Length: 419
Image (cartoon, rainbow, N blue to C red; front, side, top):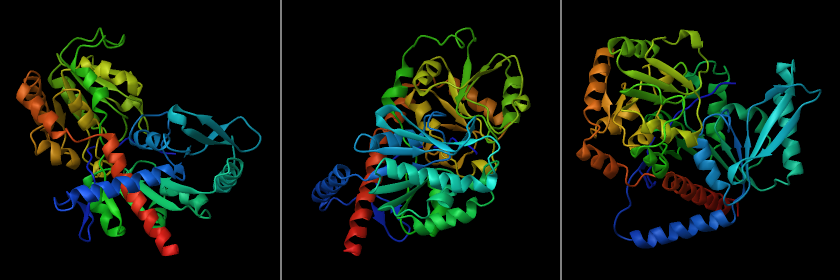
């Protein structure tokens, strides 16, 4: 098993030309078209098939893109979120089914310790077959986050297949050798491909005619809470200011040398790191008196931590695993009203750096200088106005509805073809 945490902005899709780039609709007939699209979306949602998501990410791990999108489907119908197996003290494989917020049904395959690796796919297939039978899942759509799930779902016949490609998974540490091969198969099966960022779209658009860029979006109201003083969390209250913070998964994408250099260059700055450490040895992380690793926090807790920061940062390494990432943290930091400093991640540079909303640095010295500039920006009302204007139309609801519109059209076209 391997985990990712990627993400960024949103816009409503209108296809144009062979590349399916996203453009705005023309004024002529715009009102009529919007009315027709809305009717199509509502009809689709009223008759929503069961949504079965196959994911490499854990629902309870980090609240991010899958949770934002899929919880919205659960408001209209049944949503089954199928995770990768876990190993337990049991004699036979079984499927643990439990409920999460909004009625999401979490399905976790549990396998006995020492279960033969060559039988894992067979066990997952049998458990999923049983789930479908017991829950009477007969009209459904598949929503894939991992191509690896094709190995035990290829015999199903969904009414629609969506691949929400939120990362270049093959570039991640411990990626399964078969991942690239199975992704090619998934491109053949998928009716729609959504990508988690613009750079990932550019890399994938030639592989599927119905590929669309849907950078991750923002729950503005949630993170805007951090614009006012909130009660300090117990593990942050004693940390002096100024504070430069990060939240997210701490893994091979983190530039740990940059962290160490930043801490050494400005020992009076306090660096707050929030998030679980995965796929790397925690002992490899830089240890300085002014670096504070506070561990993972819930989505609900994040605004309280952000409220006490002076600057938020994206200290990602520039490597294969970060080549196509589109960090959701960018708009979340900005919605919180925090100046942001990032390394040269393409989907941060374009559009946030280009718009002058985020400071971009490509060296350790440059990062230190950028943080100094960002600190001076804390009371810049003009910058904050520009941030709010830029993100005025961004929301998870809009991103989700743009996806639903395309799904409704795709299913309608499939039904017409089959009839």
